[in-house]
View 1 (cartoon, rainbow over the protein chains, first blue to last red):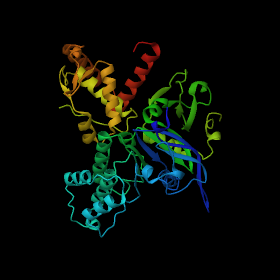
View 2: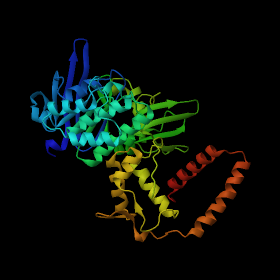
View 3: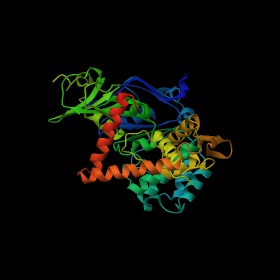
View 4: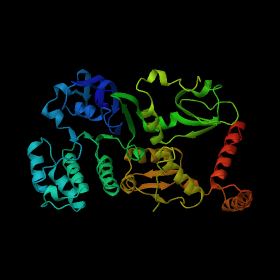
Length: 299
Length: 131
């Protein structure tokens, strides 16, 4: 696989601020053409990683390679292939939408103003309104239209739907997914909301305490993991594979396992696990993963 | 036109849900050979779903000969999918199931208990190599 088949590659990337490490030992290889969700609680290092990707920060350790180029040596040409939508969709509130578009055209090597105008017209957003007077959902749509007008190969969005109501969120994702269907854009977005992720993304990166705890293709991850429910037991779990999480009640044991066969003992059932539950289980694990894998089985 | 749904709490990968819905609709006769499925683009905008997921589902359905893609025209239910199981079979199975369900409700089981029982019998048969 050549370098450009990966939209993003990091090797041991880390970032240290004065107060400590925000991101450590981050090694990722994310395929081009996908929609990648970066998930984790507040303070997990999501924004730091995104800022490394778009070149707003330089890594303290390791390397970050975007579309085949090291970001620390990026040129205006390579940067023009990357779109970035920061948290809360910042716009110049006193600019009209038309002025925002002119500003976008003036500041970018590549900017398809006609495309942005068509998108906004189809959403019924008037060009002569000041950005600050639009609803939150409309402001998000204007910011997205500006980012898509760059026709980026990689579009990076920091918490794009966190501040939107459910209807505006759905409309935003409809436009974003429509753009993915139209062209060869890779989308990387962060979210602390894990609800409904499998609807929009095909790749997942879970970040917790500044470290990557899970990454992979979502269909593969869902196929690899399952919930095993059976009588409370501490033995006969040899075939259960790697236990991600074990929950015991008086009579029952529920195990979330990866690559595990169902125990031969009677009374065990295997169930698929929803992505939301899978992500939450990984987020609940202690920050040092080594101890957690066998915990709960040895009791 | 066929309308897809998405259940994001089932643990079933979305692409597989789309495949299963078409398979089920064909089995139950809601989709007939020659019917056109919506374009990928239409599914994406309808469900706000990842286009790669829809493309993957359509690829899988083509591999299973469930549907055929005709370039420039769309995706159609394959002509070979003519009612593999006769409607009368469904009618009689349905009648038998209704009788059984009435007995289960009368015995005090609720919908969840029935589902749990069904899942555990499925599992048992799988272990015995029947299903």
